[in-house]
Length: 451
Image (cartoon, rainbow, N blue to C red; front, side):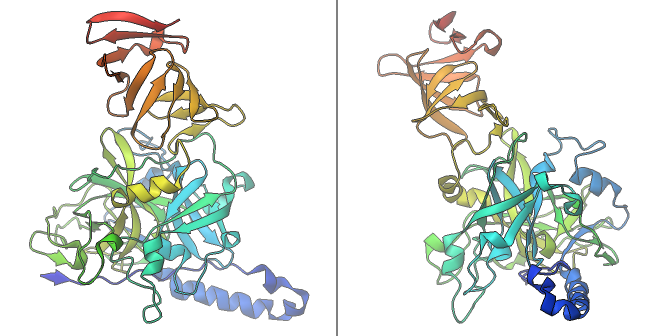
C-alpha cells in the first residue's frame, strides 16, 4: 500500500500587529486590522498543532515539555530547555533548537517559504522559554544572521516557488543569535553514521493542541509541549528520479499510533512516498504524540551512543494530527558536515557567563585561548586544531604527544607518536592541569605526566 503525504509548509501567524500598523494615520483602522488578524489566526490555527493520545490529559505532556515532575533530564528524557519558539515581526511561528551557544537550527521553510523571499534576521526573535508568552527580555534573543541550506534554495524555481527540498530532506536552516545563551548545554548533533532507526524519540514544539482520537483542537496554547514516538523510517539519502546525488538529503519518519493499535500507517508493507518501506509497531508509547505545522523546525531527540542527540527537525507530513498521521523530519546526521562547517568551535559546550570558562558535556571544563590552544582543568594545555566533532586529536603539553579524545572513550585516551603509541586511563580526581595521573596500558603501570 502506498500513502501520500500532505506537505505542511504553511506557516501559522500569531495575532500580532506589525509596528507600522500603529502609525497615527492608521489609528482608525487598527480595530478593523486587529479583527482581520484575529480571523486569520482562527483560520490558520488548525495548521499549527501537536497531537496526543485521546485517553490521556495534557498534564504529562506539559511536564515533559518543561522537564518537571518525573521528567527531569536524565537517561530517560533529554533537556528540553534548549527548545524555543522562533517568531517573526509579522507573527510567523516556528520551533527551533539551540545547537551552539549562539546558534539555533530550524526548518528552512519556516524562514524561506518562497523563491523570491530573502530572510531578514531583523524580522525574527528566538524565545527560549517553555511558555513564549511569559518569556522575559533576557529570554528573548535577536537574530543576527540566517543561513538556509543551499540545496533548499537551489530547489526553488519559478515554476515551483516552494521547491521540493522538504521531500529531498534538505529542509534545514541555521540562525545566529546576537548574543550567546549561557548556563545550558546546547543540543548535541549525531555523527554521520549515527542512525536512530527503531529507537524511541522525544519530540515537541509550540502549537495548537489536538486530541488524537477526536481531532478536537485548542488553539490557545503557547507552551512547549513534548511527547514520544518511535523512529519508524530512516533514509540516509533520499532517492528521487532526476535529482543530482549532491542535492539529496535524508529524512526520518514517525507515525501516530492509537491505544487501540488500529492506526499503524508505517507498518510492514506500507510504503510512504520517499520514506520507502520498513516496519512499525502498532502499540503506542506511554506519551505517544504527533507533531505538525506549528511545530515546524521542532526537534526529535534520540539517545544514541550514550547521549541524547538532536536527530531530526520537523519538516512535513499529514495535517490532521490525528491517529495514523505521519511526521517527516529532516535527518541531521545526513547534514553533519554542513552543520559542523557553519557552527563555531565547541558548539555543544556550555558557557559560564563572564568567567571565560566553557564546559563540554564529556570533556569537562576548559578555557579556550587563541590559535586553537585551550587550558583544560585536568589535562592542562592542549592544542586542538579542530574542536567541533565528537572526537578529535590534540597535542598535550604534559604528555608531549598527540592524544586522541572521544566522547565514547574519555577518560581513556589514545597517545600517539611514531615510536611510542599506547592507551592510558586518566584518573581525573588526581589530575589538576599541572600533572596528569594515568594508567599506561602499554607498561601496565600508573604514572605521572608533567608536574
